[in-house]
Length: 284
Image (cartoon, rainbow, N blue to C red; front, side):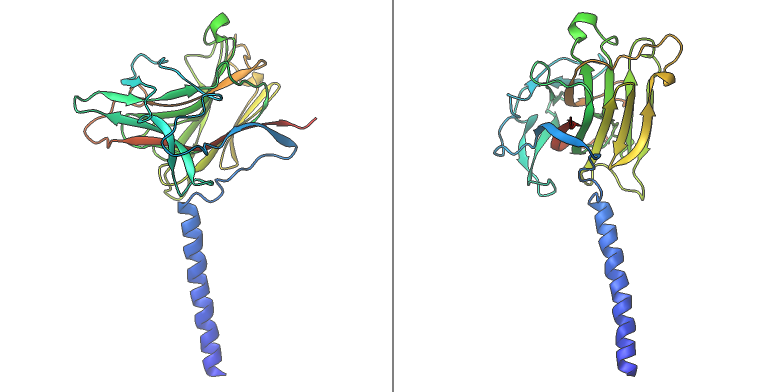
């Protein structure tokens, strides 16, 4: 009996150690970063990035754009597979992901990629989710965001902008969610989410999501609600610009006043890895 009791204590001790180890591993690998879609939503569009490694993003769903939105950015956007292609990644749910890669050449010039669903897919209201692993280091500026489809007619910011995932590499554990529109372009209406326990967005995949309904936009990281905006939150004179269709953008920018330019501490290449992008709407 004495030996059995001792063995039972040892078993309990080692079981606790194993449990702690599993919990720690789960945190490091982004536990909770799988889909957390609210009840009542059905999938209407997705890209799981399952094409063969080395191939381009699906051009039936995405288009390349070489346009910069911030003239202080230092990268050149390209259509090269070196900057955007499907790659194998064992951390991705299906073993493959989209890699948007920032490179620095021998002359010190930077290249990256930006893809959009403009003129291919747009939506009004719903739950939008991207599972991604982010770059790190001075000068990195990854983003998953949306713009109103009427941008060419009414221009920015009247078209509206929603930033679902926006981060800067020098703050590798923080994500920002924000909205922009007429009357609140200088000061962003936004909030941030910081990963707990010293975990960084570069180490594992996490989900970044927006739930968009009439007169309301909510932001989530790994299912955690961290921002909730309505027209009541707008400054005086501001106009709610989120009652029409929007399209999506994925990009990895470099430089600019917020992120700062890459410097001697920045390691290259850097990658924004995207496991999937999914759009859901409420079932009717």
